[in-house]
Length: 321
Image (cartoon, rainbow, N blue to C red; front, side):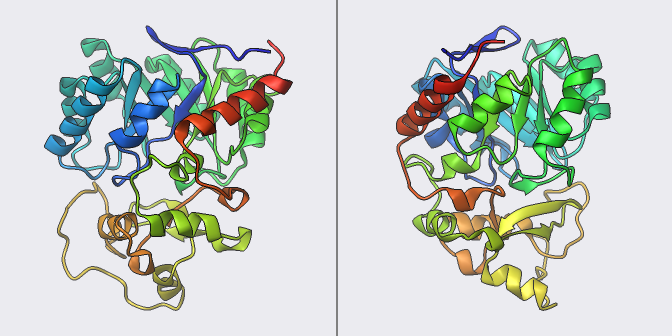
């Protein structure tokens, strides 16, 4: 049966897939545009970027597609509000935010008539987000890549959130790698759509280095582990020589803070430097965030083929609510 569209505020995505916003410079306009062109919501990872660079990438995306372009910005960023306002000024269609919770962001969304989508990991924050004016809510569980707000699995936490959210779309996120799982979350668990990140890293259009993609392709289940982030939250990543250094207790801290990007930072290491290292090819010294089920993925495909596979498989088993 045909999948329903995903309606967030006045925006409509023909396919109920949000591409996760991966920073730093993992999900840029190069990835967001083809996702939007396929009928999903393409997302630019806005955290850790200078505002002018982010704005230029948003404008590039908006020139290239009439589809929905969102920007994901972590609340943990020191320049969170500057990034939000810069994104709105540049023409972003939607702001997606997690890694902390902002109440003021909903006032900004209402003032500028732009949907705010909250990423949460508990029923309490989901209920609060809906009450404050979130246009949609993403439930992100322990299987997700990057920073995690819970150690609970998606299929455990999602039903609890579904019980308390009734007025806005509810999106499932964390470890979803194929259309059958997408249909399961929508059919059995009542999700209005899914957010997918790691699968899009293994797309031809994702602009990370080939070394980054090869790390995904070679990852075994036991290679995907939890690491401590300077943000103050655990993160899910693929084991690299840099992580092995940390596990041995070696000093991997930066000599100086070049970016001053986080509101609170443990200075255990420079996350900006480490993410950028892997993104540009230096996986040995880099941090490679990844979802828990990345080991199941074994090929790099064009975004269009990824979408076609998801939709075909989902529609083969999906039953309309």
